[in-house]
Amino acid sequence: MIRPATPGDNTAIAAIWNHEVLHTSATTDTEPRLPEAQRAWLAAHGPRHPVIVAVEGDEVVAFGALSSYRVKPAYAWTAENSVYVKDGWRGKGLGGVVLDRLLALAREHRHRSVIARITASNESSLQLHARRGFVRVGHEYQVALKHGIWLDVVTLQRILGD
Image 1 (cartoon, helix red, strand yellow):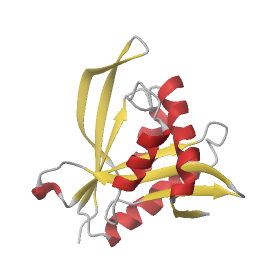
Image 2 (cartoon, helix red, strand yellow):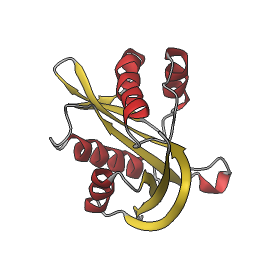
Image 3 (tube, helix red, strand yellow):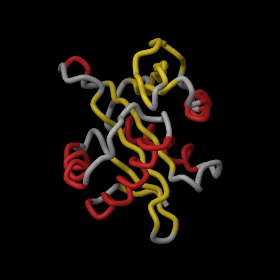
Image 4 (spheres, helix red, strand yellow):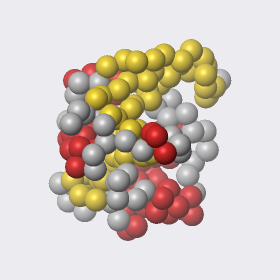
């Protein structure tokens, strides 16, 4: 089941996020998100930039978010998406379900396009986005250093249209 995230989901969202921070290059963050920072992150997402969770039983197994792409007003019609699936739940189609819902929400909130910034080594996320119609619009070389490895970041975009 996909539903809007609530403050009660903060611990589960942070656990998924912090696993990625500590053990993968899926995010360029290098420090785990503390409870106060997690609460602030969720609270900062307003109606046009929702956070959703995928729930199996009582367990949050994935989350996704639309975030502001840039702070300048002219960018208000573009959102950046994030999709994270809990370790042990990958390969079951949850990422696609979450991304599909985010794209529907982006349309509902009249976003013109959605951006995804993905580390080049995250092949599963690149493929997920390509299957949903995202196209590569940029490649930044060696822009992030994590776990002693220089990372490239690929930018993908999906134009939603009218």
